[in-house]
Image 1 (cartoon, rainbow, N blue to C red):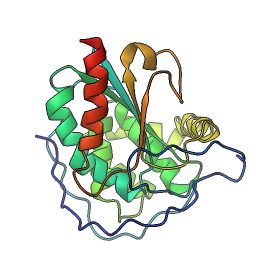
Image 2 (image 1 turned 180 degrees about the vertical axis):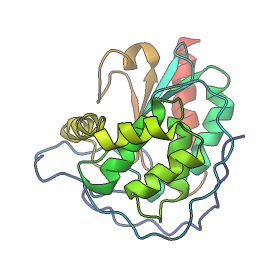
Image 3 (image 1 turned 30 degrees about the vertical axis):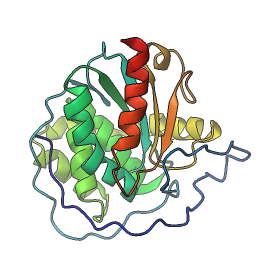
Length: 249
């Protein structure tokens, strides 16, 4: 079973805040399918330290390669763009991902590509740290642990602690993190998707794997979802996945 996190009481829908880097202007408006959308400030700081790290949960059974989970032969691919300081991204990881893993990933129907977004600061370090963990096949677990501690500062000290909590090769992880190996990749991805009209996190693109492998955002033949619903949050994802599965089966 995937890690279980404490469930937080959901607040009423909040007025979205703009999420556009100052260097990028004139981006297209988002066609939001899901009703509640969280807008995160790119390059923002991190929240205060609220205590020790949570105990890591069990590892996922699904195959992992870098920041991709699930079989490469799965007929449907979902691409998620997220930020580590985004509460609704944490909600997706806690409430939706486990059901998608059980119903679609473990059955070979779905693969997910995860792309953390950031431009600077501790959130950029957290994004790079997750990709460093992905070198050891633990990207998903690292994200789970970071989201479980979303109210804790994403300092390098804490990011290193998460790697130790997961039993990673900490020497290799620390070398990767300190070198800034993945920072440019995260920044470039962030700028690309914002220029393509992604202005909120989390944002998801769901389509045939054969289509999704050809191009990047906005992807051909895709369903686009933004945010996470307060009620029955998994429903829009299942609807989108099932619609695509019906065209390939």
